[in-house]
Image (spheres, rainbow, N blue to C red):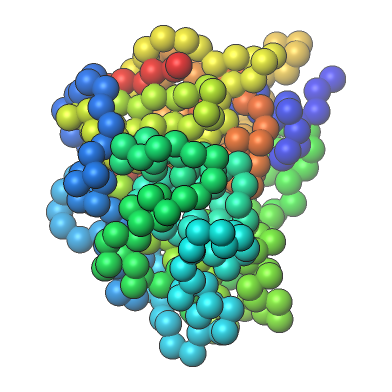
Amino acid sequence: MYHLNKVSAALAAVGLSAAVLIGQSVIADTDNARGDAQATMSKSAATKDVSPVTNGVSQKLTGDSKTSMSLNKLLPTIKYSTDDLPAMAKKVNDASWTPGTNIDRTIGTKLQALLNWHHSGVGAVDGYWGKNTKKAMQAFQKANGLSVTETLNTETWQALTSDKALMIQPVLVNYQLTDVDVDIKTTSIPAGATAKAELEGLYYESVIEALAEKFHMSEKYLKTLNPNASFSAGETITVYNPGNPNTAPVSRVVADKTTQTLYAYDDKGTLVASYPTTVGSTATPSPSGTHTVEVKVHEPNYTYTADDGSQTILPPGPNNPVGSVWIGLSKPSYGIHGSPDPDRISRQASAGCVRLTNWDALALLGVIQDGATVEFK
């Protein structure tokens, strides 16, 4: 007998059974450059490719590069406004940290946004100082040659806020819900693999879950910001502004088991992005050494192997065990993939694979190259 539900340890066993990819969308090679050099991003490079001010439209990239076109296909365009923002949103947008100031939810949200916009990912935005925010801050510090600290300091805040154009980008914005947002297929996710396999798709379980993922937020924070919302078409809600993802082609990633962080490098060895991740566990450790990217799949199926060796194919969807993305490695059955439970990234075990939030996995899928180097350390 086996048990497989959305948050169980059994679901974490996504790396021990190869995904069967039937009817999936395979992402083509974005570039051919390769790079193996280790380097950290200089202070000048750190501000060169950060997300620009989005001027009312987020996650809509300009230009005709392969990476931009790929990202525009994978990520939803978000049109927002800052007219008549609630007082709480204005407070977050105007927030500034000073030494000795506690990181409350107002400053915490601003800090998470700045780290994200500098491509040091914090996972699901919730406004709290926690494990993933601390890791993102330390990744930003390492990338910029700053002292790595346990708490926020003046040097780090000044580096985060040095780009004045970035500083005027709003953190919390108004968004008017559309029919496309709310008229979606939802389902109740059953516990067992056999029951899951009978579903048409492993869709979101609610509109709120779908919206939280669209805006890179925790469901609880989305509901906190909109306590009286019905989440229906035509309604205006307050959401986090994701900004734009990294657009630099990635030719090498390093999965750090100690920090539970995935570091992404371009072909010059420059660190261009970092993502909180779950890498293996004591019971099912991740592989060691260096491997390469062999396949990139959007909306994969997944093959679940039970203890008795029987296999069950689970349909695609954001609540698939590997989420919305499978980036398969040269080591069979291992890969980088999404997650059906983004709030628990870095807080649960995996079975050897590199697990990201679905939005981080999609952003990486749009820029990682075929044959890219994947190192475990």
